[in-house]
Image (cartoon, rainbow, N blue to C red):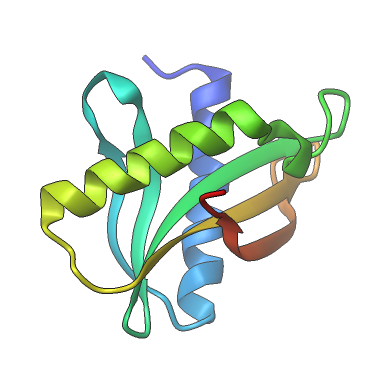
Length: 123
């Protein structure tokens, strides 16, 4: 049984995947679970670079914008997940973490989608 939150997330991920494909990304995997640490929403290739993509979706801004939902703790987690994925796949090429912010109208239609390339970097 899916919850409203799961449906919202799936709608956002679908919109993000379409947006990425329109920009030339090739989607490799979606919802990659990495043990208890979490999941990577979208794994894609952008040219020769592996892009690990976090998607955040909001309907309205009562809880803040999609961009505001990725704070320092989430960024550290995304870096850890990225490193785990790259090691598990034995990927030796360039990789980065991208972020896609999806805003929906109250009725669920896509209002806008914005890509932030290389949104999370190791400090």
